[in-house]
Amino acid sequence: MMGGKAFYGSEASKEKFNNYLNKSEVVHVASHAIMQYEDPMKSKVAFTPQQDSAFELHAFEIYQMPVSANLVTLSGC
Image (tube, rainbow, N blue to C red):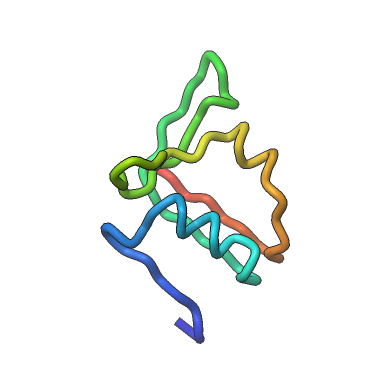
């Protein structure tokens, strides 16, 4: 992966996403997603559930995040 890091399964947590978001030039997330048509800002991508922590990343959270990465892609199905 040209020096990158990949997180799969139980390692693919929201906490790791938050930790690496500003340490990386490029961030790519491919995950499950849920669209909320009535309130699109509540749409979300899901990370691996972790005990005692949130695992969903909502659209409204993304707009509030400070991001220093040059490119961030979120892919959900």
